[in-house]
Image (cartoon, rainbow, N blue to C red):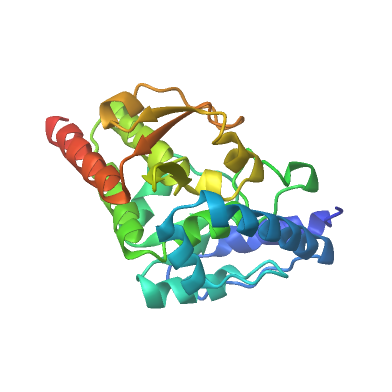
Length: 255
């Protein structure tokens, strides 16, 4: 897949110029990028039928991402706004710490409009528009998950030390990125990094599965350049969310 350097540069320029509250810009995608989206989207959709959680299935029907082209952030953002009040904002590259978390408290998910290289279509170590939309945006159409994203944002804003911020980041990783819940006795994905990667979804069968407890999660190493070798399985979405709220309240109040 060949993408003109000027196209990527224009995406970066538009993203950097964007300010919250402005209309979202439209981004140009090549026919090769549309084809890659269609190929990956179809493969992931088939895998979601068996490997994603019920919350994802319901949310995906409400968002109704197009199967044949890269969607514009603006059209998906409009849908989310009507469903849960969340909105998307363009940002190139991976954001860390408060730069990523703080806007979540106000219902803003900063999302890259860029597309992964064709060599990374099965697994992309960096966020791309497939990760943002197939993973995060769909889950943000679910009211419970949208509330949890906001909750992570508020918790991060109140963290007064690097250790607490790091713990919150790890909890986010093992829930909103590589989160897994048990449904009908089997692990089902609810995290964006798994939901947007064919390799990650296949890896669920080989990963070491542990019981989800927040205290154990924050002691587990993260390496986002490879498939997560250890996944923590919550009894349900509700149990995961209650556990996260309980533990983060403890962290923030003791900070």
